[in-house]
Length: 167
Image (cartoon, rainbow, N blue to C red; front, side, top):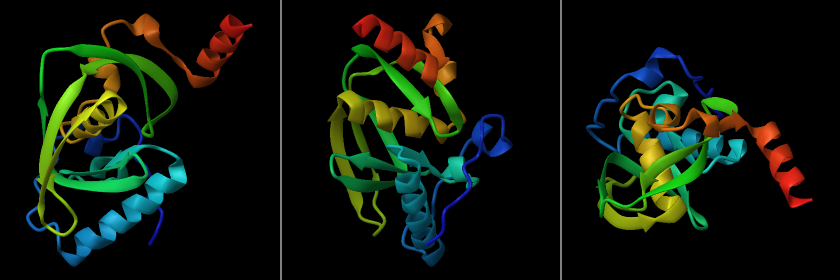
């Protein structure tokens, strides 16, 4: 396994439409998943999309409770119209966080690393992560979804402001 370099905002691979994966079980896909898993765990993040590591394919990994999940060719379907605001950051935009409206509940489906169809539902943080990572496959950053840029800030400054409020 190898750590992969994370693409930063503005890199062309992050701004395009990712291509479907023909065979999730191919040896190069197994290597990519292993390398992405190592990169995600090393970064301390909770999700990582293939375009973030310079690979324009429809694949992402995310932490789901205590396990790492893989989703090839994902489909994310809102289960209702309810939106929630929540703080998001991104490995491709280090040091910033912003409040982003996302669907509170989603269904998801795609294929796992063995090529088997998988599906499920998620709410709360899980739903947020799935939508965030899926956006990367369509060239969308969380900043593009923000409705109020006054709710965008540097991680350190936001932490200081919260600490001051708690005192």
